[in-house]
Length: 229
Image (tube, rainbow, N blue to C red; front, side, top):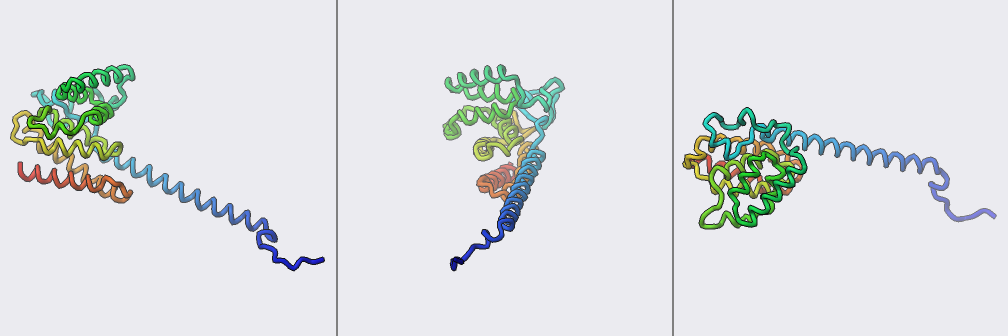
């Protein structure tokens, strides 16, 4: 007896169904590959446009009469060794930093982190210190330390963007351009950071980053500080 029910096209043409599925998977794979390439291109360009790590400044640099803004003494850590401190040494430093912040010796803690020229350690230290220190009647950080934090954190804004922007802005607001300990470095350092942020903002905006408002707010603050020096 011949069935009167309808027969689906997939039952009649199983090979056609397999072909459609294969084409769909191929399209999805192509889209994923394009997305991955765009992401890699974004992070690569962002890292390249950040301040070079060989130009890190620290309180010790600023106290040296032989150093110019944006350079390091000849015996300083080479750029390729930044963030590659031996594990044991990094653990020891982290333990020491914890002791110092527990004792509220913030100046010593940040000076040690800045002199190590290890951006991951510096970012970690910032995450362990409550930003309420900036609302105290007397800020427990010197002008040299504040400016060094601004410059070093600005070297890598691709990772941990939002917390770094918050710290940079807090430090920038506390800077005194007339302080003799930083007056020589103030304008050029802030201009460097401003240029970096201005280049990164369109890239972050294109990727839909939630950090864009913070970037723009910091750019506004930097412009005001440079204008009213």
